Image (tube, rainbow, N blue to C red; front, side, top):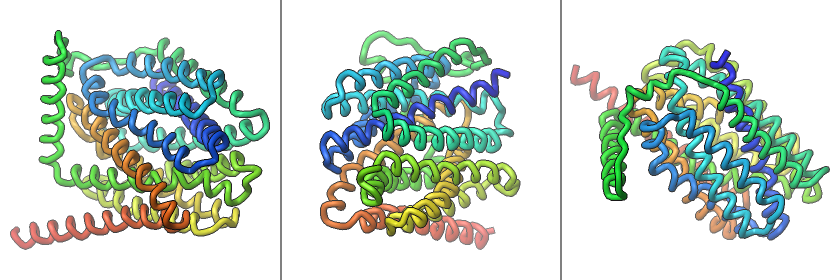
Length: 403
């Protein structure tokens, strides 16, 4: 029973994450009317993720991951509630920064613990179920937040959001599972210098591990560029919603992401049934789905017709869920003693990509239209995937010739 609860707890926590994304972004845009401030909101959250990613994986490998998740849920609930009382732009940025920090800690510890609970042979199926639950949370969270914010205001959305984190923490408090903490290196050091030396040593070990696995390195490169591209549509969707109907921005903002989430749910039902996804096919499928995802984003940003936007948002959700699920599965194939740090690197790459994207996106938006800005970002991801596929295919053929 605990195993199922573990998955539903994360989905419930995700519900809060998606709700605060709608409420906070709409709150900032309404308060400032500036796409630059909106980008800053997302960039600051990403910066928090970058900073915590430097050591979140180390902590996930050295300490009890369950306790880390409980603590981060409580902290997120508390800081979200501060916006109910202090809803000014500066406070929004501060809150987003800390959300980025604590969300990174939660995500890394959670992802690293999955194979320990469900087994390496069930990783793809488990990740597909996680993605399905996350997508359901996304649909409910985005559409629900859009409707609640539109009718009742952002305060109610934020209060509900905080409650989801508190409930998640309470459920985790009542859960127990075998953490295998003794298999991982637990080193308690005194002094800043010793701690810094251990962190540097851990980072070197992770990068040595990745460099010895060329396909893992290539997947991480694509993931980095994918995060960079992701900044464009995260910034662009609230602006697209405003272009469709400025008076109902929060409603359409939630609706677009909600339909995208329905597509993600479909993907997670189909993905576990594809039995051929193993070995190097996992990597190739990751690259192909990333390209199809980017094609979808480019297409639906090219229109303000709601039916066209929602149709392609649905198909984009399908391929986006495939890409993220396959990426997580690849990382979870790594050894347990280093898995937390591998996910920490993944989170760092994601945060760095987003951070750079949120710096570049407003600049391009000043020079180009919204569709062209999205085309530039997601076109970069498509070109990266094509380059990687050409490179790996050439390597494979050269190996066959040598044999």
